[in-house]
Length: 104
Image 1 (cartoon, rainbow, N blue to C red):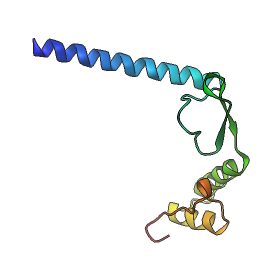
Image 2: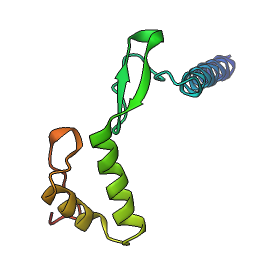
Image 3: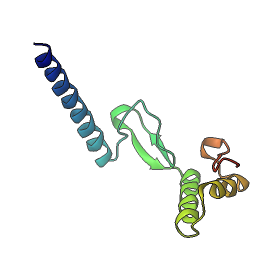
């Protein structure tokens, strides 16, 4: 009896996760924020409220991401060195300095 109850609970949990995932992906496909309560990901800003909200690029943060990716892929730098360079250029995430590589 207990095993049947646990199997039912597991199925319900999987169903809930699937529904939430489909809803988040559907919202993202239409340009809305996947969650109205969560902050926008780094590089974006949330515009609007609740179901009317959508993501727009935040130019300064987007530039930080592009530069970090360029240093990583094109220059083949390690994370610690990238963090030191971005800090020196004052390209901080959310206005804070970043640390990396243990001795940054």
